[in-house]
Length: 138
Image (tube, rainbow, N blue to C red; front, side, top):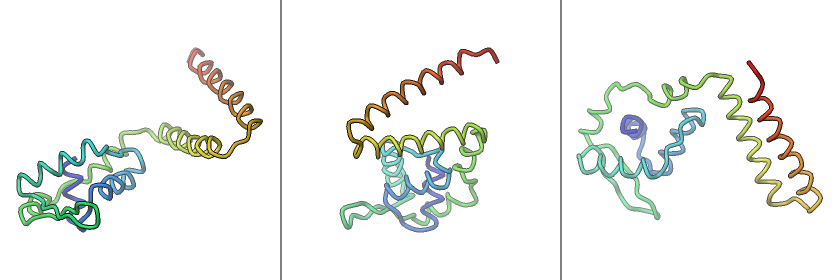
């Protein structure tokens, strides 16, 4: 986490939300750290004199100090390592799940009663089909 934050802050000052979003983008959506891991890391780095935080516009923007720049040095990009650890076929499955989730959220907000009944039926069948796949002998 610290390496990722340092490397992103070398490029430009960012707030915590921007750091989370950029790690997610660079890892292809595989790694999206939680605020509960990012903000404590930033606080610790601030305590160690690696970053400074400035309040403004309702958020806190972090900048590297000279010591932070020195420590960032020539480190590897951790988001690339995370993205490489997921096999390509599993990554496609993850992306498809994300697309399905997006469709579900849209349906949940705008569907009429008949569409909800159809969606429930489809989801029940899909769940059963997935368990059938898992129960098949390889």
